[in-house]
Length: 458
Image 1 (cartoon, helix red, strand yellow):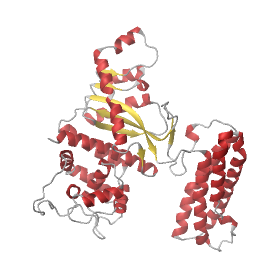
Image 2 (cartoon, one colour; image 1 turned 180 degrees about the vertical axis):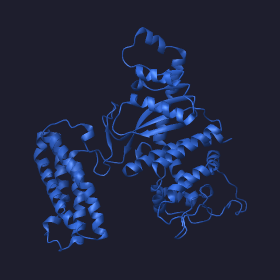
Image 3 (tube, one colour; image 1 turned 90 degrees about the vertical axis):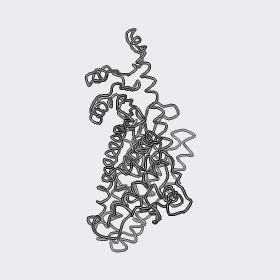
Image 4 (spheres, one colour; image 1 turned 90 degrees about the horizontal axis):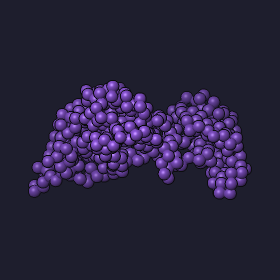
C-alpha cells in the first residue's frame, strides 16, 4: 500500500544538546520540496506500480522519502548505494529526506521506484520549479541563451569486432540457459546450444592486434569472427522456435532476450561486411554503436580530440538566474539552427512573453532565424554570423548591446560544464532510452533546485 509520508518528527529535538547544521541552500531546497504540486506529480507515477498499489499490500516507502532521496542522489551525483549510505549515516540528511529514525530504504528499492517516474513527469517537475523561481522573482525570462551538449551513453568505444563479440557473448549466454529450459524435448542436439563466446573473443583480439599492421591484415580474423557470429545467429533462430513452444516463465524471458539482441547482431554483421570488405562509407544513422544501448547516436561536432561522440545531443535553453528553463533530448545529429524557433516558441509558452534578448552561437545563425525572432517579439537578437561578413554586418556586430549579449551568452558554456561535472550529465548511467531521458531530466532539476536554493537562502 502506497503511503505518502512518515509521521512528522524532529530528530534534533529528541537528542539533547544537538542542533541542526543544515547548509542554507539545502534548507531552502527543503522548503521548496514541501510544495504539494511537486509531491503530486511524483505520486501519480508511483501509484501505477501495481493495480492495487494505493489500497493493498504492505506499507511502502513513503512518496515524500522517495522524492527527497532521489533529489539528494542527483544533487550530489551519488549512486543509489551511496545515497543509501549517506542518508543512513547523516542526521541532517535523515531530517531532509523525512526518514527520521525509520529504516532507510534499500538502494535496490529506491532504484525500482525511480524507474517508475516518467520523463514527461520530470519535465513537468522542472516547469513547476521554474514557476516557483518566477514567483520568488529570481528570474523573469527576459534573457534566453541556447546551446547544445552531448550526454554520452555508458558504452565502450564501438568497433565492429567488439560489437560482434558482444552480440555473440549475450546470445551465447542465452543459448546456455535455453539448454536447461528446452532439455531434450525438442531433440535439437548438443551443437545447437554451443556457446561461441571464447571463439568470438579470440578473433576480436586478433583483429585488434593485426589492425596495427594495416587493414588487409585483419581480413582473415574478421572472416573467422563473421563465421562465428553467423553460426550463433543460426543457432538462436533454431532454439527460438523450440522456446516459443514452451509455456514457461523462464522460456518467455529467454525469448524476449533473443528477440531483442538477434536483430542487433544481424545489423552489426551487415555493417561489418559493408565497412570492412566492401569498403563502403556507412551513414551514421545506419550504424549501431552498442549492442546494449542501441538508441545511442553517433555524433560528430568537429570538436578537438573528439572526432565522434556516442550518446544523444541535448538542447538547453537557460534564462537569467542560472535556471535551465527548457531541455530536449534530440534524435540523431540535427543542425543547431533547427532548434532556434522551437526554443523561442517554448519560451513564450513557459513565461507568457518572448525574451527581451535571445542568443546562440555561430551554428545557430541564419537570416531566417533572425527574422523569426524579430517576428516573435525578441528585441535583441544576438546571433554572430560565421564566415565572411559584409561591412554592414561587421558594424552591426560591433554595437555595444551586441557585444554585451555575446558576453552574456558565453556563460552558457559554464552552465554546460557545471551540469556535466557536478550533476553527472557528462555520461548517463541509466539504461535504455527512457532511462537516458530520466537521467537528463534529474540533472536539469538538480541544477535548478540548487539555483533556487541559492536564491532563497539568506
